[in-house]
Length: 317
Picture 1 (cartoon, rainbow, N blue to C red):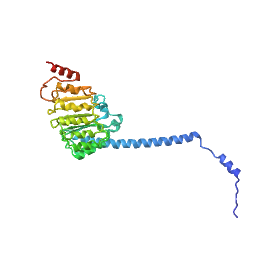
Picture 2: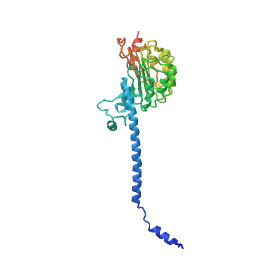
Picture 3: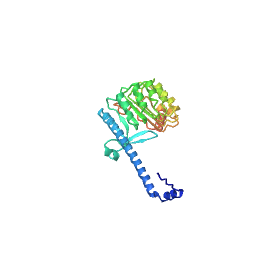
Picture 4: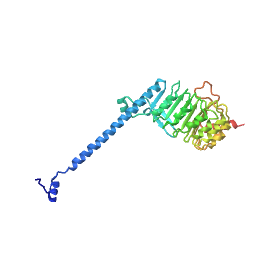
């Protein structure tokens, strides 16, 4: 016959009271071990991601350099704002971060500048530049740009400055590029920007610097720059089909601090117009562009005060 054992409430309470309790120190130790494990796992994930990104970036860099291109990392250059400038550091002090040296790929550093080789980039090159999330400056030489090229450029998340060399650019392509939320500086160097394309520049929300090169640009195109209200710097090169009066619309630019003209038809008689620019601080007028084989026809002008003196001297009877 089965026997039934009855345990009273007092006996249960006594047994529970006698059970050993975990010490506070042991509990903290367990929590510390758990936290250390989480940190270690996060560190391994971060390290793995850096290795993956670094390998992908290293492959793209190798491809760019095989095509005679060039890249600059953030530890090799000083990037300054207002105005936007990219100043290379001395090579003797621009060493890669220690983790880059250990793994042999970009781990802590990032590519911030890319220059294409003389043969230019293909659309495939441009689409792959999205693997460089910190890319801020891009120089494109002899690149046959298509509409798809400008879609790829507009999608670069950190692009701030772009130089176009020996390329032809349409108004539609500029409108596509204007979708870039970060682009501040555009330079058309010996490129085919035309009067018809320049009005599209007003679509860029943060455009502060522009360089234009002739001969397809005239005073009509220059006048359209007056609609780019954030412009702080304008440089005109080798634009012969213009007059001093073509600068008059630029007086509307309240933020224009720097104006440079090289090899353009601008002389001391432009002083009454340039003197009206409310924020102008730096003025440079050269008779010829840098690198030209022509001899300057007049003395360089490097300030508004110099221009004033030449204007007044020319006005004397």
